[in-house]
Length: 202
Ligand SMILES: Nc1ncnc2c1ncn2[C@@H]1O[C@H](COP(=O)(O)OP(=O)(O)OP(=O)(O)O)[C@@H](O)[C@H]1O
Ligand SMILES: [Mg+2]
Image (cartoon, rainbow, N blue to C red; front, top):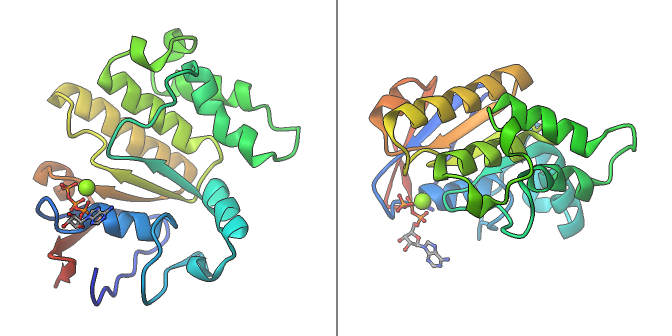
């Protein structure tokens, strides 16, 4: 990435578009505290995330950011309910929060209540995406980062997955940054950010 100057207002829905290899996932990884930029900074809700120590950054990520990655990211040896509850268990917050109860609610919200005890290999690609959305929401993040969450899905399933994602972002008042190749999805966003060869297209 070079010369990036980007401001996304809290609560907005922004789409990131651009050709394969243009830097969309790289940009998302830097915003999400996963890939350290060699220069410059990223401020989320007033925190300059790349000035945090590693453990503080890990804590910030787990509390504030929900990720829907480009490639399958459920842990294959865990049931869906455990996959979804895991970030809450790792965050070790107050015991008043019941990670499995909350995970069950979120799976229900994305239409997967019947599959809570299934393993990832036992459900379809679209169902896996929905489970990842449920997992991304378990710690009530203020920022949702989704990298082509519907690219391998049929149109009907894409609509379902997107309605879960947008509905969840609205309900939680979260900012949503969505990487997509779909012009139709980008057209529905409040802001469109176009990346070409590591730069923003003005
Ligand atoms: N781990 C890596 N190490 C070195 N270069 C990488 C790495 N990951 C990506 N790149 C390079 O960085 C550039 C941007 O990659 P990136 O994954 O951000 O593209 P993208 O816009 O998300 O593409 P796609 O639409 O195919 O997912 C590409 O030229 C890619 O080859
Ligand atoms: Mg990518």
